[in-house]
Structure formats: C-alpha cells, structure tokens
Length: 111
View (tube, rainbow, N blue to C red):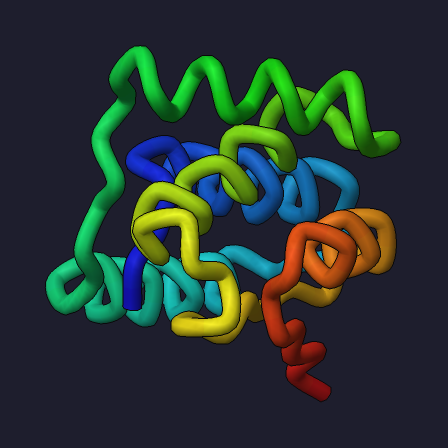
C-alpha cells in the first residue's frame, strides 16, 4: 500500500475530531489508533518533493479537490509512475474518487 506521507496526520485529525464531537468513544479511538499504527508499519510513504507538488497544483486546477485530496491523488500518481491503471485507488470520498477516475485510476470504494 502506497500513501502520501501526510496520510497518518489526516487520519489522526479525523479521528480526534470524531472523538471531540462525541461520535467516537475513547476506547474506539484507542482501537482505531492501534489499527492505524499497524497499517503504518506496512505501508510505503510517498515523500514530498517538487514533482508531487507540481502534480498536486495541476490537479487543483483540473478537479474540484481540497489541498489534502490533491496531495493524496498526486502521491498515487507518483507511486504509479504516471501509469494510473497500474495501481488501484481506494477512497470513500466521492469527489476524490471522481478525480482519480478521471485521472485514469481504477477506483475502489470500500464498504
């Protein structure tokens, strides 16, 4: 699994927000963090560089994406070495999935 280097921060942000809003108990947060750490130990992080930044900037002009989503999709493009059909793109975000599809990725929406 290849991910953008900032993905773990994005996940923590989402989990902490859910806990603050009362939608996630402390016990569930702890369990989620254990799962996140387990995933992080096995994934490959696409590091920030000029190519990733340039790709993310292009994606922002072409698609209705937020900055973090553009960086996620740019990292996927870099990981796929500009051959998007070579890697599946997994997301539950409809807007990001649409952009990934338009960029040529096969998108997977886990249920």
